[in-house]
Image (cartoon, rainbow, N blue to C red):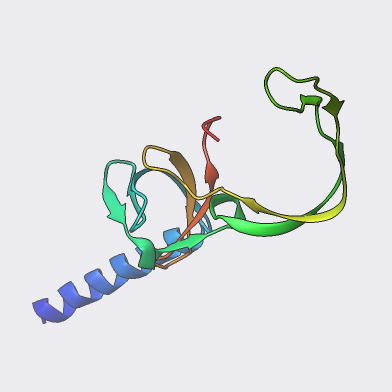
Length: 131
């Protein structure tokens, strides 16, 4: 009978823990990138997360995107040394493809959100002005 009572108490404790967790749908963590490839993040000095546990937002990935530009280059002198030179400019306009380099670097501090009841962590962004 004592074993049944202990099992009941343990089941009640487990249900209580699960209820507390369910009332906190989001848990925010802070971490530091300890390696870039493979990506590993040390979270609050308690655990190291690897690539399989991380979901990266666009804020922390390299990506290609299109932009619209209307630029003019700065003056540049042309010609060879010792000859008459001219200055000239070039116009750049229209839609252009660029690469945005946002992947985290070793030493970057990041903010993460843990999925409720999960082992996956969403890496939201860097902290501070490193990039």
